[in-house]
Length: 313
Image (cartoon, rainbow, N blue to C red; front, side, top):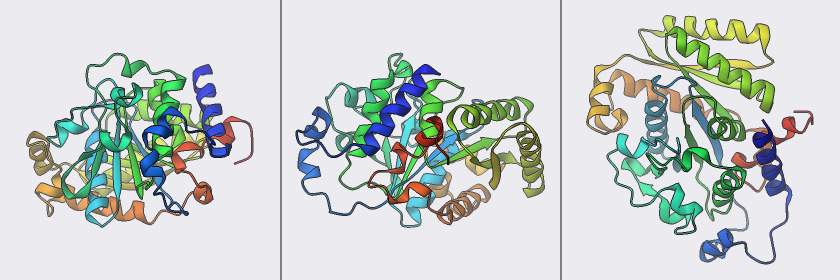
């Protein structure tokens, strides 16, 4: 985990450093926006949506949760952090002309990269089929984070749709956010991989709480039974709390919405799955602010750094 430790030290330095007298290249790109920034920046809650295993509906949850929060009147930004195999833009029928790679190369600012989606949701697209983006180094991770750090007006919610697996792309983004939503379905491989991701985030990054969402289940009873399976083994072997945060039912309307490249909460707002996503959004909106809310930074940049340095949480 040398790469992970190196990036965490960078994140800590970003949180603690004073504003530079001479703008960095990224700051220079956003200088016109920064000059108009208000004296008091509002707090942004950063939430990673992860799953461990592919195919559990993680991106579907991220898209519909983000749009549900937007429909409820919140300013929401969705970062597609599956850097090499991005699909959020495809799921919403968007056609980006730029992606994160262009930001890293200095060809555009983060503001210029934003894609407007239905209901006010804003999407930060990653690249698809770009091997380089799937193998970002410490400096490139830090450059992405710095771009969000320098937003003149951060969103109320930053959702981060992580990739599948346990790569540094996944763990870096998940460990840096203030909350982690773990999407699990009722399959042995999903439970095994969810536990594996929980183990890495807990033991290597000091994550002490994970919010579980059961996806593609028949009813709440099945959802809670799934939660108990994961929580039982985590309670026994890991120093982490897994909270049950909601469930999404099997729903043909959701499948149809995916085929039509739309969010079900936008296309069929009264469907069973759409109502479940709206309930999840209401639950998320009631979560207490993280401990780092007082920082004049988006929570994305420093919340998980203290445990990694051996400091008390």
